[in-house]
Amino acid sequence: MLGSRTLPTLLAILLASLGLTSPSYAQKVGRDWHEDAEAGFKFRPLKEWAFIPVPQGDRERMGKLLEMNSEKALNVKLPGNQIGQWKPSLYAFQMREPSGTPTTGDGGLRNRVSEEKKRPTIETVIQRVFGNLRDFKKGMQDPYYGPKEEKLTKKALGQHVTYSAFDPNGIDLVLDCWTISLPEWDVGFVWLIPEKDAKKYLKTVKKSMKTLTLMDLKTDSLDKVEGDANYESFVAYQKEQAAKIPGWRIVEVPSKRFLITTSSENTRFIKSVIERLEKSRDLYEVDFPPKEEITFVSMVRLCKDREELQSYGDTGPGTAGFFNPNSRELVLYDASQTNKKESFAVMSHEAFHQYCFFLFDEANAHRWFDEGQGDYYGAYNMDGKKPKPTAHMPGGLDRYQGIKEMVRNENYVPISRLIRMTHEQWYNNNDSFHGVASYNQSWSLVYFLRQGMRGEVSRRTWKKEYADIIPNYTRHLFAEFAKTKKSIRDEIEKVIEKAGGESALPPDDLTRLREQQKKANVSDEQKLKIWNKATAESWGKIDIDVFEEDWLAFVKKDM
Image (tube, rainbow, N blue to C red; front, side, top):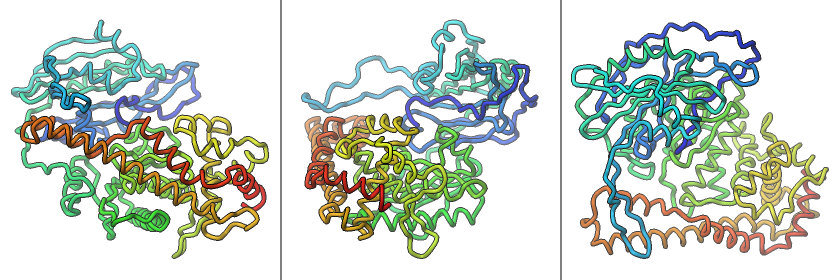
């Protein structure tokens, strides 16, 4: 979801003639002001345009200030004599001068970047953020309009230029760009409009931009507070963030294990979400008990509907929820009017990823472990007082019939291979059975192990040493990641000391090093060594060929 963002997703492909024209919507500038006192401006967006929350961290990481799109879609021509629907959109970015980038290495703290510091242009931001645009560089050579300096309001001036480009789906677009220079930074606006609607749209866009007014910078905003800080401070910070987007608010959870930011007004559904989250967390803590009390508050973003979730997450129409490790959010939607059971199954699956993210200090496990257990918890029946594991997830999420068919047709991979697959190998293997082969087999593997640990598998196919596989894998995975991350953090501390200590470093460099130290990113090579160690200390303690025979017998006859 970060880095290169795809352009607004086509809402639907309509089997219609090319003679179908776009609905005639009279574009108007809205009456309400959008203020960003931290960036120093306010303006009046277009009427009937919706705000899309900016994921927390995107402001600091990529300078993203604002995202909006039209609530009404336009018909657009697609290849193959088809018509699709596409929503015009708006993005705003804060463009600062880059600071030096210190790195670690044999030479300690390297020299700061010596090249001349320049603020990025809106063109460089577009290429970085919308990496899937076609022919944008070509369009830069021959702008659709401008460049031209435009007077906005009072002291505000804007550099205005419009470019042509192509959406990956083959849609002709114009990118109407405005750059406003402030003493501390530039602010860039990018309006994305289908080219055939540009003439009528851009007149109103210009009226909107002409309302832009510079503001005194707000200096009393709360500093960013992470979920492992003081609870009251964290809630206050999140309330301030939610208040920036119309229609969003914070809902506290009695246990203080979760904090919900939502645009849904359905209090009954929100209550049911909280109940499912709490029951799911209780299960995780029994199966994966933390060594010490977890103080990190898990953020949950509950969108008002599926369309809002897709806009926020830049996801396809089949997505019912996801965990975003970059923003650390569990993202869901109000499914009270759609498929509540499927949504809740996805919730328990993705909430497991969020729990492991904090429990294991952002460590990555093999996908059989992550996804297999996510599906295991997703299949839990939590209607009664005591949650019960089942062999079925609702609707199209179910893995049961899929693995039955795969085993019957011998269309599965050896267990010894499945448990060692890299993430890329695991995902590629899905193609061998309707895009879900790895999901099916990993779920059945975890279901076999978990049911056996509960005493629910026949002695004919269960051996007592199987009960140690998941605990041993988890223990060694955590221990090896902890050791590796400590080494990385110690190395960064040495870098700071060698530079003369904290006081000798420029503030931006020190902040960046402390952030690197906290995250302690593990390289792919280090990760593979950790995975091999965890696998050897768990799966390596059993006869894998005998285990596969037992697993097959369980799937065929006992599951």
